[in-house]
Structure formats: structure tokens, C-alpha cells
Image (tube, rainbow, N blue to C red; front, top):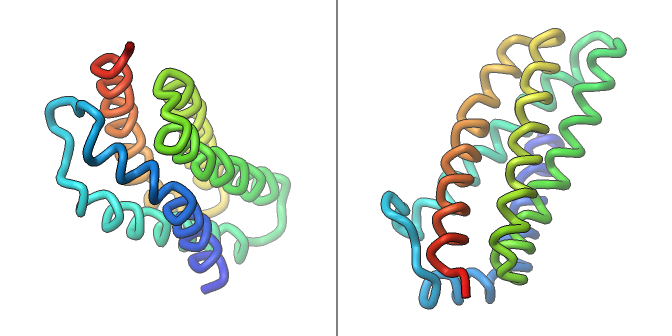
Length: 150
């Protein structure tokens, strides 16, 4: 449970810190086609953070190895990048920089997912929705950047 709580806490703190920026995003930012309704985002992210936490817990419980250590380092690194993306995007409205940050995050998630494979295949598969959602988020981020450049 600690890994799920940690993951959800990072997401919750990020959401709380960006609540004002999120309100501006909802009302003032031009959004690309296929942008889901606002209610979808917290639901999807809650599920994704839970899946991240379950995956990390499974890796933590795997036998000690260099692969396990690398997987957990990648988990924490991608979690850090995830946290700061929201601040760049919502609070600072640096959509171009946020897009670059998001691409780096996607690569980190991919590396983490592939690293999980060597310790626990289920942990790897649990990260696929996250990887796909962040790819979709990159489309949305790119659209927002292109539609709102001044």
C-alpha cells in the first residue's frame, strides 16, 4: 500500500499545487480536438498512479538485483518528471517547454516499463496504460501549444 499511497500523494500534491492554473486552463485556453471533458483527467490519473504504485510495489518485492535497483530509480525519476510537468504546463503556462518535458517523461516511462520486464512482467504490463495516456497527453500538449502561441 505504501507504494500506491506514495504515487497517489505525488499526483494529489501536483493537482493541489496546480489547482489555480487548472482553472485558467479550463476557461481560457484553446484546446485541440479530442480533448476529453475535465472530469476525465482526475479519474484517469488516479487509476494511473495506482497502477504505477502497484507496479513499483511488485518490483520492490522482487528479489534484489541490479535490474530491480535500476527499475526503482527509473520509477522515482519518472515520478519526479510527472510531478513537475503539471507545474510547467498549468501554473507557468510554458506549453512548449512542457511538451519537451513530457517527451522526456514518456521516454523515462518507456525505460521504466522495459526495466520492469526483467523483474516482474505484470508490473511491466501495468505501465502500458500510463505510457499510452502520456502519449495522448503529448498530442494534447502539442495542440495547446500550437493553438495558444502568442
